[in-house]
Length: 111
Image 1 (cartoon, rainbow, N blue to C red):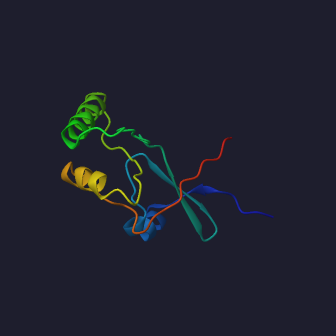
Image 2 (image 1 turned 120 degrees about the vertical axis):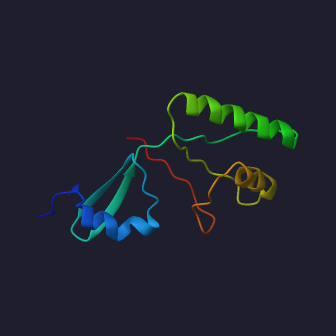
């Protein structure tokens, strides 16, 4: 018989906190020794710049961030191509934090 999936205790959350990028919208689910972070997140992905000059890219992202902040959004997530250092530099200058230590694949499951 399978164990029940339940919300993690504060102690269980503390165990995975250093490498789980927990946010106020996160819930940690547990079954036995397994844990998963369930995150309801604002996401800005993909962004299509279509060859725009760098200054226009900055203005576009700045404007979107202001719209999101004015709507009460406190954070958002996104992915970038691993081979686009110009985009990475812009995001870092806007205060973005790289969460992945390696290139990742992105997946979707339709429920």
